[in-house]
Amino acid sequence: MLLLIAVVQDQDVNRLLTALLEKGHRATKLASTGGFLRQGNTTLLIGVQEEQAEEVKAIIREECRTRKGLVSPMAAMDQALNTFIPTPVEVEVGGATVFTLKVESFEKV
Image (cartoon, rainbow, N blue to C red):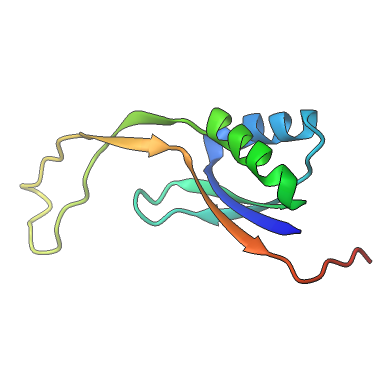
């Protein structure tokens, strides 16, 4: 058995959960916060048999595509805030980060 830990942007998570449920996969949803852009994200814990892992990863790839987004950079600590005019920067957002762990035992109580 494997445990897939998928970190997904909040705007993708509902679509991903729907797609997983339609294919018979369940997930535990945990709220989390991203570091780079400080945007909300969700961590999904998905337990699967080894032969199902690639199918689940394919669903995640399909539903959590990357896209371009504009963000305003933060002022550096040594810059005066009254002279700092942020220019939006285009960055790639979305997608998912998936960790795969082997599970020694699983018990439903």
